[in-house]
Structure formats: structure tokens, C-alpha cells
Amino acid sequence: MNVVFWFVLVLVVLPLGIGALLVGSLNKAQIYLTGLCASWGLYEIIAFVFHCTLWPLSVMTGLWVGSCAVMAGLGFYRRRADSRALRKVYLVKMSRGEWLLTAFVAVLLLMQTAHVCLSTFYGNWDDSTYCAISTTSWYTNTVNRYSPNTGTLGEILYSGKYSLALWPVFSASLAQLTGVHPAIVFRTLMPVFEVPLAYGVLYLLARFFFPESRKKVLWSIVCAQILTMVSADKMAQISAEWWLMVNPWTGKAIASNIMVPLILWIMFNLEESAGTREVRYWWRSLFFACLASCLVAGTMYVLAPVELIIWGAFYLVRTRRWKDICCFLVCGAPPLLCLLTIYWRIIVERAIIWLGI
Image (cartoon, rainbow, N blue to C red):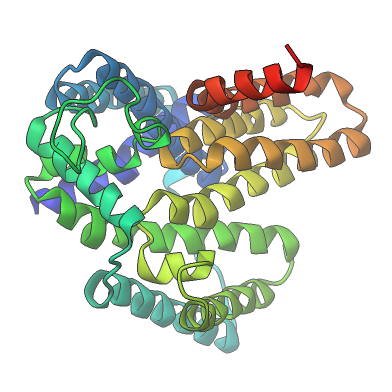
């Protein structure tokens, strides 16, 4: 029960409250996902400070949970007038075919989640490093300052992007809260949350493409689930589908299966609501999604800005809202800052060579 309590609190309740504080709309998916991204972004900021100062992980975990609790409390209090509307459950009338498709989606989801939690092992160096960072941070009570390979104390950012994208340390914090070993949290418990979240984001995208047909949305999810299983079986270690089926706990799996589609979904809604009052909330959602991507994986330091540039160009051309360039720059600033933090020496050296200095 202790595990269930902390997982529900940290991954569901607190994000809902934080989202209620940051987002003024009644879009439940937007509220939750914005709150989740904001909590992850806050974790990245606090964790990086504690990484640099060598302060205890336990203090950082308590500070992060406490900060999230305060923001969530303010959010729930602020939206108390809307609480009835937010809690309202809509009983949607579905045909027999839609019920069968829903059941099929649920069965496939349970099968994939159970497979990941109980039947997979990934002996790759990259994955072992992630898990070792989580375990070492837990044992040493630091934020990734001891090398998982040698056990020696390292300098700030001693391992580059592995020291800045602190997603493995997040499992160490959950281990401190739940009392469960971080390797178990990382590889067995987190997929129970990550796999459904990946398909949840995909569901939101499908609803955007088929707003008037629930059956098409459900068929899209079924096709995606089947393609994921087939691709994972035929393409070893080189596809997002394989990562989702074998090691969804790693940063690159979260990046490709959750963060990239989530940013795309936010930008779809951003363009649809351009010129309305709701657009400011979607800008907030986009900013916190980009900030949260800094916690997840070093690859997002490139993927997030590229995604913003490509879709942002389409957005600007279609809406003619050229002043929103500043908003895109603000949203892309966190991952770009992380990219410069890691690779500034290489960038300077290449610039010197290119300029012939």
C-alpha cells in the first residue's frame, strides 16, 4: 500500500493539482499532462542544483515533494469552484463494436505492460548505466555524483548528458519514498505508469485526427499496439517500438514514445486555439513539456528544438502570428541551454576551426 500511495500521489494527484494551478481551461488531459511536465521540470531544476552542490538526495526528494504539494494545494484551492466540473464523469454511449474495440485495446495494453514488467531483460550497456546511476545515487544519497562504474566521486557533469538528464535519479527518489529498491522501481514498477501513458498520448493524437469518430480512434490505437509488437519482434534495439516493449523505463524510450508525441499534440492544439483566450494555456503547456524533456533524455536537447522549429514554421506561415516567434524561443530555451551546457566546448572548438581563428 505504501508503494501505491506514493505512486498515485506523485504521478497522479500532485500533477493534477499543479496543472489546475497552471492551466485555466477545463481540458482534463491538458491539466494533468501540464502538471506532470511541470513537476518533472521542477525536479530537473532542483536535482541539478543538488548535483552541483553535492547535497543529499533525501533532502532534494523532500524539497521536491514539498514544493509540488504546495503548488498542488494552491491549484486545488484555486479551482475549487470548478471542482465539480473537473470531477464529473461523462457516461459516453458507445456501440457494441466500440465496446469490443475498447476491451481489445485494454487487453493488449495489459498484455504489453505485463510483458515489460515480468518477461523482459535488457543487458545493454546504456540501460545498465541508467540503472546503475539510479542505484548508486540511492546508495550514496547523492544526485549522480559517484561514478556507477568505479564508485569514485566525480566532478560536476562528470559524464556529460548522463549527469544532466537525471531521469534515472527520479527512480532513486521514488525508491526513497516507497522503500523499494531503485532497480525494482526503475525496471518493474515504472512501466506500469509509462506504457499506459505512452498509449494515452497516442490516443489524444488520434482524437485530434478523428474528432468525430471514436471507432477510428480506437482502431488507430489497436493498429499502433499491433505494429508495436510486430516491430519490437522484428527490429532489435533500434526502434521506438522495441524500446516501448522491452525497456520503456529508459530516457530514450520516454523521449520517443511520450515526450515527442506530447509536444506534437500540444502544438496541434496551440495552432487550433490561436487567437483565442485558451492559447496562453497551451503556450504554458508547451513550455513545461519542453522543460520536462530536459529531465528525460539528452536526445531531447536536440529533438525538442527541431520539433519546435519544424512545426513552428508551419504554425507561423499558416497563422501569420509572427510575434509568436518569441514564444517558441522561450519554449525552446531549456533544451537548448542544456545542449550548450554539455557541448559548449565542442561548439567553440568547431566555431574556431570554421572561422579559421
